[in-house]
Image (cartoon, rainbow, N blue to C red; front, side, top):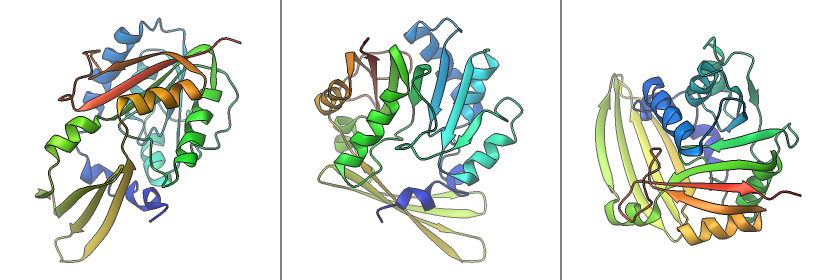
Length: 243
């Protein structure tokens, strides 16, 4: 259970999240570029880049962008894309093989809060900040806890190609837990678990500030719309303090 993400983010990820495709990533990057006022000269790192969707969109716009992920299954898919080949590195988010050389670090689609111990989540955040040049931006996209608590779908069943996907969700204290069962056409079943730490905006702001980030801003979407209790996403942007 403590390293649930190793199994969860593997070969079944594209089946579970088919809506996270290249076209949506291209649209989201286009929106973020506008919100963040990026010029195209920035060096960018996408932490937990998965199949490289956002990385590909950045490279297509001539950004000097790189991606890291722990999942070799997802990185294999990323390496098959001409735009991301040679720009991806297998690494764990608490120990990344870079120095403070990035102008922007992205951590998108709830790729934070995986560890059961808050101290380890904080270690991951500090590692992200350490990769930024002074004045650089950290962009962390997470679930909006307020919205999730009001609208949690406790159970659903969907057909995804040959797979029947059953999902059960619950909130326990500060974490949202999703139990997933995938049943193939021959009746065999695979069980996965997702277990993610939830945060209120004031908690994230405090973590950002403790990690050396200032001017913390919140958005409710990639378009830069305000964060409200009914928005699905909580996108936090912080600026690394200058030495």
